[in-house]
Image (cartoon, rainbow over all chains, first blue to last red; front, side, top):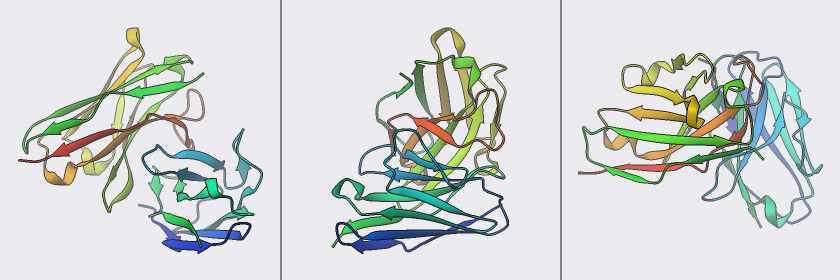
Length: 106
Length: 123
């Protein structure tokens, strides 16, 4: 099974900061990675798919990059509404989520 | 608009079974595979399996084979996930999620999710 190692587990940043979340796959998964935002008590929401494609309606401050085994989600200019837990998902072979990164406001 | 609406919270005793429903609307039900994902406290998000609403065939993650049954009723555009022999480890929120690409299961992420159903297993 493909494992997704996500870091950091928790992140505290100031409003307006650039935030970076990383996911490392246990084997190469050419681009089949999505990123989700989950606010407390809600279902995950799709932000990015195929590593770098922004889902319709998602603010442009969210971006994704990466290939092979290293993938990154960037929030350019942290907003209060971005307080949430973020998960990566690999869908190259079955479906595996990272353990999540909780983003807080400093 | 696309909507997935799940059934309400359940409280079950160990050894019992639970059946969760996922009522869909706003799209052609038979065109998109439906997946089930669970989120247990401290255990993150875990894929459980999928069902092909067109042909009806399910596929289960190895961890859940023999204990989970996924079905659908096309007449009411609803999918179901039934889990048997529940233990406290099955206490979790269960989600249905729609595959993002029509009539395809490989290399597809999820674009729409149900609101989740909390299943609590307690004596």
